[in-house]
Length: 313
Image (cartoon, rainbow, N blue to C red; front, top):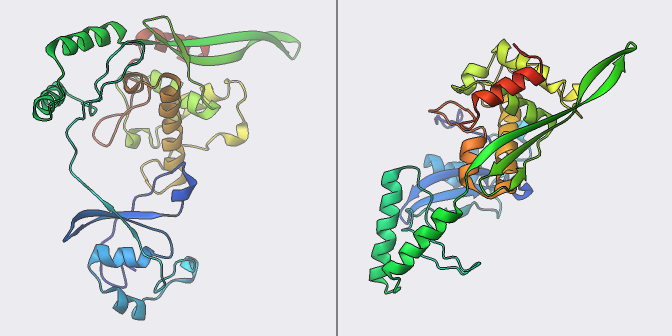
């Protein structure tokens, strides 16, 4: 369609767990009512693109040619894209909860000291403007309570071996390889992973500076390390071993999708185990387009353990 109507296009795809959004399309447009997100399915996709590119939908319906390979895409019917308002971030909302005699403030997530300070200040202003009546003593109590209950975590890699015989020779094979986050209150938070995600996770532990996806793509050292770890992890399947990571630079490739799914599995599992963003930020495989992917909380001791247990140099 972009070629037919001389329009530029850039398409990004991402895996979605919720089946209701499978085969859906989204874009952001500016309208007289403000910025909107348009969400379409295959029946309303053409109308969404017309609004995105500023084309006349009725005229396009008269002239567009749909390739046979996209025969499920329709146009000119009763379906229309859903329209979702995009508003500016709201000021943090003050909320008091009673849970085991604790009081909690519900802040927007801050990623810097300046943002955190601004959130505090905005909440204090709301307290005065809306007459919530929160006293300085309550704020001090809250501060002390959260300081006391604040959790920190350490990563614990538990590997057990068992003796098996290969060609009548006893060898030690890995029986189990499990990952835990231990909090400062003594809690143990097991975050289970599939064999593929676990191998990717342990491979990232070995790299303390982090790696961008383009650096991983085609890197034989990274792939061979991943492969060596994967084939030693219990319950692995050789049929599920990727042939390589040569095409990770291509955001439309199955390898790229596979890789992001495995990284996402780590994040989800840590959040399920701890319900704590600080644990995810420190111990998941975190990164973005401007920063390398890495496990910030991994230590030299963890790297030494992985090398020893999996026979890596």
